[in-house]
Length: 389
Picture 1: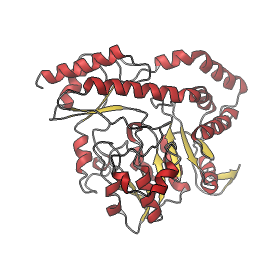
Picture 2: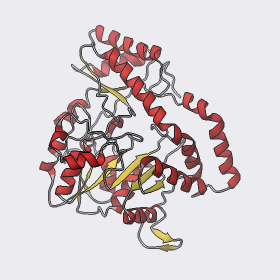
Picture 3: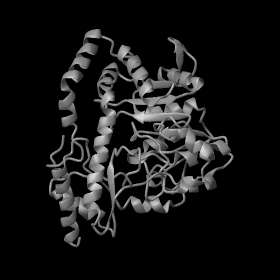
Picture 4: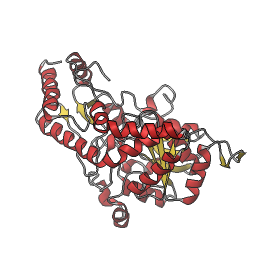
């Protein structure tokens, strides 16, 4: 999957461990001839709703569609504002714009990489209708505080869980949540991300912690009306075939992808625990290197990415050196959403996001990554810094 000696992600060990089961699932679908909305889709929805502890799970064809349909099911439309983070993949803001609403960006906490709940209040206007936190890199956002703010202002909450499948919220968010209502904290501690707000939206892009072998997404909710609307929107806006009530989408999860996800789902907690072990090893080995800030390992974090901060303007040179040594890495994200060409010049500066965009570097991580390889990555980071780059 990569020419690197150490790729940023290697899916082969996971595939090899499940090869027989995955092939059997694929063959079952091929033999059934039910490639669109076959029985595996419904079964996957039932199984994933049980795993997440949520009433409704609606499978769609991408994480982006999960956000768009989720927003529309909440009634978000033209003239509305949705508060979100600038530090995320473009699908977050794009989904808001694509339903006719306006994204309003609130800067992030430099230690969690997530939206700073202390800065949300000042961005609320009469047009604000929802908050869209992103659980970036698999680290749960400060949901107790966000829920308190939403309830106080009668706002909806849609969680972008594209990187956080299997993550759980435990309230370990740097003390800011000491100010949240204790009742809120008690009600949501231990819940999966995506099941805390009104709607959760997930991606099953192949690189995700729970990844399909193509695109895929999921909407979850405990609200019957939201679920009914989402189900209608995913099939061209119809509850009954050929009786289209609204303009919808062709957004159905392929039966083949559902069958593959059914094979993978029972393993997700073990895989996420493996990622946490890798993250802990990295943190220990990187702890004493000047100019490197390692990520929090808060309870419930599932480490879709292991992302360090490289200080003193050395990030790009460190990445270049790693590349030369055959070690993969990625920058998530080099340009905050509010600074992308489509939005540039329309928003005030978000200084923390702008700074971190010049510092973040995501290192190789997958469940089966061994300590010898992690040490090799860390040793090369040390060498890159010792070159006084």
